[in-house]
Length: 476
Image (cartoon, rainbow, N blue to C red; front, top):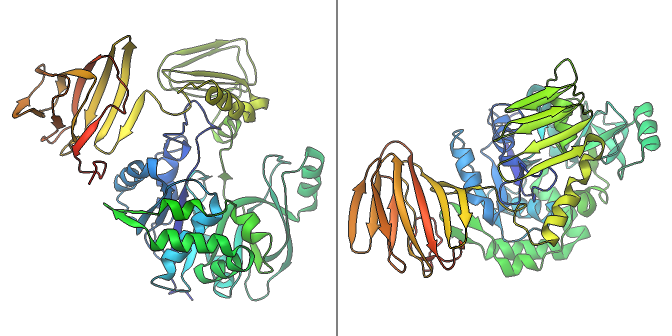
């Protein structure tokens, strides 16, 4: 049993709405460094970068593929594969695709399914729980990990644990899954000692998961099989077939499998877990000052209590307020009562309804070659700061509606401008006329920083015609 490797499957989906404005659709919370040295995605992968585990299989959406790859690269993790979902279909299909991929090499592969956006402060307790669950999973059980509750939390689903399994110490049968309760019911669950929070982390064999899913939702399995069979390899990514995956029903693991199977089991564990479902959850786990405040960034607090304040750009000063949340970025500020932190999602819904873009992207946008940051925007002009990583280059491209001026701030730029190429160094510049084919490269060993001034009748990011691209974004 001890020689059987566990295959981590890390799910990196999400729309980034509950921790807005720091988390956004284009850069949701799993890519942020909110608690500790690493981002939550990195921490999740590093947690199982240990003997007894294979390299992880990642499932993410297409828009996040380069962010996932880069964040894993920076912590020296080379994933087994990165599977790209063309559209969201919830967790059950994502896990089905991963199970199908694993059974291509090993029918009874054990898969440890983990969301990428959870905090676990006690890794040793987590690994001990996984080891306890392993024997039950090898015997065909579908094991979930239940968090031993410490408060009557109304924001989590609960699991009612049943009898202990004699053949698997620390593992219990599942009596039932229950929805998020009201406060009185949650208190009764806490007092009984028979309930655990539903963590959304699972351990089971790929074969057993597919058996149970086939029993209850054959259409989902069929669609996932077709999406994987018709998948295309794109650089280091496995891109599922969009048409086939679009036919897949949308459902969670809990509803599709765990609440229906008679083989559900639970390992209760206390491991400092949080799904960071709202800003008040950050306040719960952060170190606080003598007034009960937790803060990050340039913050001044006077006569303020029990509050969470984060700024990644401007100075934030607060006086005479209690029990609030303030989150400041360079293009948006959120102020909320801490008791209503869950309502942030409604703010994001309103942004969408009004056609605004602040829920989608930060002013800093990450690309596989580096990033760009919007500095100024006006009628017929736009100013950006561009960072290109050493050895990387942008696509060979042209624009129909805008010209560009590039000024090197630091580093060295190799410029293609029509038929000419040139090296630009600090304080040197060039001009790219409308309609001219061009490319920007960093041939050096340090990051390249430059200022780009765009001018023209249309400045949208979709005014790009790519001729060559090292990241699979140019037409074949």
